[in-house]
Image 1 (tube, rainbow, N blue to C red):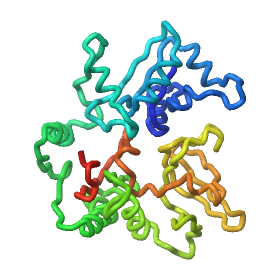
Image 2: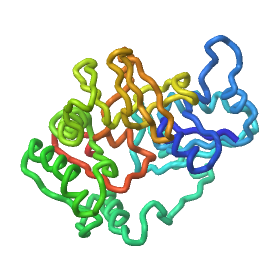
Image 3: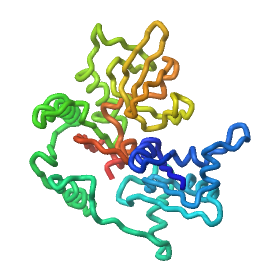
Image 4: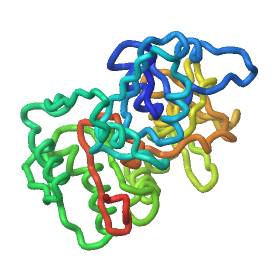
Length: 306
């Protein structure tokens, strides 16, 4: 049995949930660099069943490569939700496959991600899918109209830094900001700078380094944006999140402790692999779970709102 997902974050989540090895689809089907078969390839070659989670994110090219590598007689199980985000690349593979009546499928109708006291989240998700406005549920789901993108950004920072932690007796670390887009006001670039300045400001006891206009500081939340199977003991993959736990300005490297507990060293020259993760895009978050979520929505995000 081979388990895979389109992104590193989704693959890690799949591995945590099942207790079995999981990897990105790219890693499962990649050709060996030196012509020598790898363990990943032997896993695919010997599999009787290939399971791909978060299949709505499969684009046409990746799905075609995967199908070409699966041996005759092997079964392919796609797990996903056509109402979630489509792939970044061209094609809506899962939706198109489900439009073929002869392909067997099982539709799951019971939601397990929310508790009995959070049904408003599920109800509002269905309302949004039907084109209806969401309805407020105090303490569970709320919408706050704000006049300008600048005001939205300010409100997000205030919610994360003060209001939600005070109201729910929690910490900002349990809150994730999810943005439709990276750029423009209230996008990830803008909000990461604002949230870093508020939650982890410059201080003598927090060493930092500068890289291509970004400041990486001790205590910052960060996100890996490239697959690096040879970094660390088990590899670090696109979508992995962690916290900067050491900055050595003499040796010009820093350490990131990821959510699995491993501390991984990064030379300052490799910091283009990292982004701040106080705010991340909705695409990067797919497959994850958070106790509290804040989503800024502005018309400047354009078609990402769809």
